[in-house]
Image 1 (cartoon, helix red, strand yellow):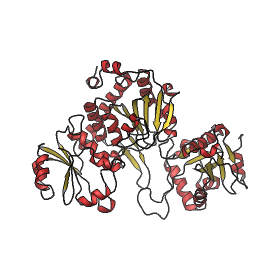
Image 2 (cartoon, one colour):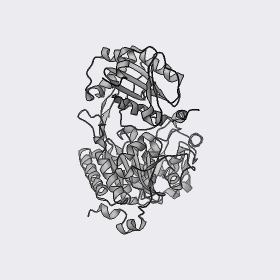
Image 3 (tube, rainbow over the protein chains, first blue to last red):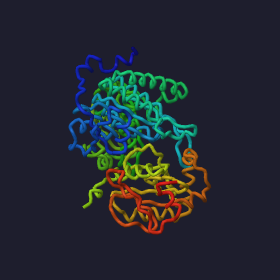
Image 4 (cartoon, chains in turn green, purple):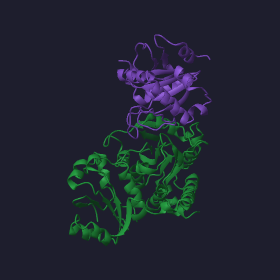
Length: 341
Length: 174
């Protein structure tokens, strides 16, 4: 079997945890998406559909999965989450790439197999209509998440026609349907044939796209990979000695500069998702956010600490808490917060 | 209170789609409440909007076609004056109708569905509809899609003065 096969849950572990007695329950924000999902597999024909409520009013497993953000579909078997699915018509490129990412991270952290169904290449409309291509760093992040969390996170392409318009005659569902059906009929085995085939296809896709666009193997313009000592020298005036000492625990750092202004800094998307992409891409070495080989520093050169906290408090009832989920430090124009060593 | 009044926006959307499909309409585009659909989202930019992105734009909940008629549908749980005004505003503005036609063309949505016509023909066949679950009266110049559960009970409520092309398009036979 493939090397990736060894990274997933062992068959022994799977058989120990398996419970095929429970009925399926779908949790969603939108009945249209839930109806679409039930049509992917006959296994879901009798699934019960529930609307996700506000945090705290759902079954415990659902509340845990929506802690960062709400995915489109969560499938429970009895009380156990067995699948998370996110569906989007947007190509994850440019500013879109980090949107919706934190919710996928949460599923991976909790060991729930996850599917993101979206177009890899499709027409963007409007004044500057053109074909947009998937940002390859997303596939790389998925690969790292698989390695770290040992849980499959699948990118499945929503195919297009000759005009690069999304196909919507039902045939676009063929691949996602095959994977969901095989996974469910195998008793939710993450090692099932179709999941492994999709993981192989994703690896091929990543390497083929990377060979055509080698620049995507390097950090984007907003990201620098630096010696921590050089980074601290540059930001010496705003980082206290104690914080500097804590950050020196890792010799290398990733500096992600976000040039939001005070007028537009009350926001999360796409940055809070993008930070996770860079985290998995360059920093993470293990499943806990502290498991990093490099520091992840978020830098806001145009915002003071006071303005930041007024707009983006670490409040778990708001999505702004996502800013505090994985970075080691937030560095502002006048000071810095150490979030974790 | 009628049971139908309890239908939420998702259900109104699904009910409107179900009725239109059952009665032979082709769904060209749409945007469901808070979610992703398999239909393409069509955006009609405001002609006086100079902002980038979606500022000032209008995204119809559904756009459907049958026998040369084109419907712009707004879906809400109950009758809503602002929806009526919104649709009337679009239909009365030749520039926005033109922008809608160009948007459908740019996305190849007419061609993909075997529809070949001029902008003028499109404008002449364009009509507005309101879908909701509140039993009520017909509207003078818009079609009402009255959604009930089970969805097969849903029905069209023609406008008081119904143009012939709409009468033909909502009829059971071609």
